[in-house]
Image (cartoon, rainbow, N blue to C red):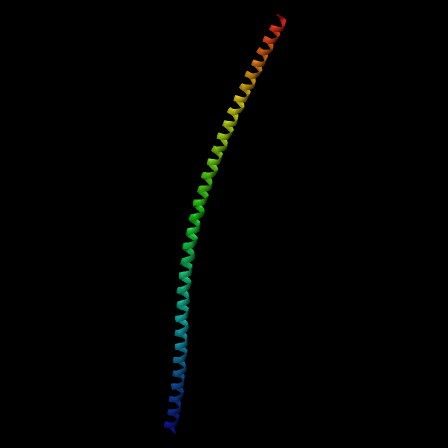
Length: 115
């Protein structure tokens, strides 16, 4: 009877051991899968970090370029204003000269008419 009881106990222990080994195997597989996912996530994170860094540098470059273009446009606008002012001065001087020439011509005509 004791031998029969010992055999049953051994079978229960054997079954329990087998179940524990199966659980351990499933847990090991789950751990391996989780490690693989963590590795994939880390690689993806690094990829996105590098891409973000590239985009940040590109934004900085474009911001600097935009500043340079604005400065060039401002300088060009000032140059256009200076050129327009000079052209206006020349036009005014030409108008004065034309007016003076017209006045001289009128005076000459009047002098001839008086003769």
